[in-house]
Image (cartoon, rainbow, N blue to C red; front, side, top):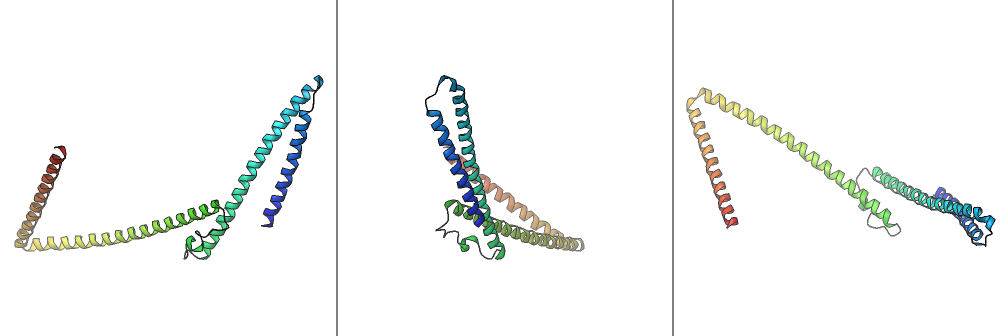
Length: 196
């Protein structure tokens, strides 16, 4: 923190030394000129423009460095708090919504980090659920394969069971055909109703 104070003092010193220099050049340029001082006038104008450009660039760079430093401090402290707690508490319980002394940029960064952590947790939950479903489907596939193998063994031993399974398959196909026809008729009636 003392480092930031020293840096701010140094920046204010640089700003203070630039402003009087700009003032001196402007008073020099506005004084009455003789014919021989025309080249000096041009040089002074050029130097003033260069000084103005450098001062503007200095202010922009100073603002960027300050913003980056604040962001680094903010994200570093938030990261340390969440890593210490091992993800037990979210940033909202640390105080994302209770920022009375903090700037809006700080608040926005904390809220953004909170959303990022929540989405990470949600993706992890979805991946865990997907792997569980995959394992369950794999177990069901093995169970169905074993059941169909057992049925094929039974049909090979007893021909009457083969006929029974054939009738069950025919009923299943018949139900599928009837269901398909009903759905096709419903769609046709819906299209006729929409077009008329």
